[in-house]
Length: 602
Image (cartoon, rainbow, N blue to C red; front, side):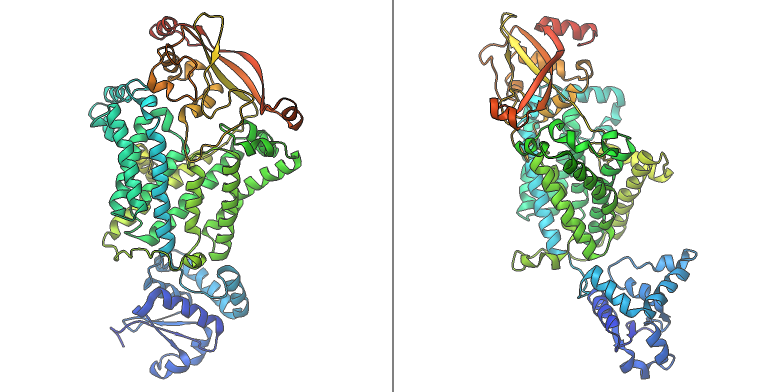
């Protein structure tokens, strides 16, 4: 019967066999014929009833018969799934182990059925991800809109012509250092034009690309445009746009360009991304040796010392220490142990998805991390399938892509993402590298296609805050208030999700360091002294609206959350203690002289 459609013969009296055949039928369709041996044995004299009761039999197109594990791998070759056939044929010991496992399962079919129901559910059907893919892309488009809109309202003050780190100077430095190869080391469309108008148009074009993705119009070109535009913003934004969520958005956005070309591969690449991001965050906490993580006291500090707490963070900070220790242990458990369920069968994988969803919602309720938690929640969609989103039936159906022609390109995509990811995990945590992977990783680094992660590896236990003050006479000082960072102790923490006030964030980092190590800090003071609109627009309040101050200084305070008694007595959310000057009293001439003379800024 050579040259015909392959046939799988199974035991029709075996319940678990019928369940798996129904699943395989959903994968292969008419590419494989399924027959019970009770009805087909007469057509295949080379087979016996004992053979078919012992294991499945796969009759290939050329008439060759495979049984057991070999039959399973040959069958999966006909499905749009990784088959394992290559490993079966060429990896030493793989075939022997696969057959032993198959024989064990075949002799314990009741146990196999129980495990199958527990891991995949009572109905083993081929999972589909059409709606998952559709809603993921719509959500990603919306996050792009958030990211570009947030950047657009502050980018000129940050890196515009009158901003803190003008992008024109950055590009000149890159060109002076790398010459004609500067575009590769700093890939950005701002090489074409970098005026304030160009910066605004870049953000506008990115937001419109996100809108096109949300509207499901020219989705793949819009995703490619959004990735290129956001990469341009990140590169041109310099210090203000080098956060892990910026890189995570770029990595997720790059994979999204290929989702319609090869959905199955993209699904696994997203799971790999989610695993790396969560696991690296957890492992970094332990690898750092920080005693607050090993001693389970990290969350006793976190809610008060994180960059931009929400009002709920104040209340969570008041919880009993034992409860906060339990929450710290749960964080490590999720990020280091349970994260491996990303690669588990359907039910445990979805259980982890719900745990991660609850974890991310808790973070979002107690800390302002812009679109970061929203993007993580979006990535968890790939841990579900369409059956889990049963209530979406009747919603807009996804556009079904034709079978991809760019198979080689998609395989290359997998290599470009998986190998550098392995290299980064190995390099950061074991001090070992895979030579080929390291080469790929280094070559792709400027494009942020694959990135290292590791949030809050070292927990801050104190909260220093910089308070910038101006004066016209050197005697009476007025503080500059920022929109989101702590300032006035009586002002409650706010909400800013999905917006990220990037100067507020940088001031949190700056307070943990020194002024002379922040190349944007002196320009910030100069901009306030000159009362530049682009820079004062980054503040909540300008105490010198008409003319800038003559003197400026930055003072360092230690901030702590108040408790219920203090809050009831004076209505303050924070109490603060003066720690000294962060930047001494200076005039415009003082700052410029220090900058020209290369003297320390502190």
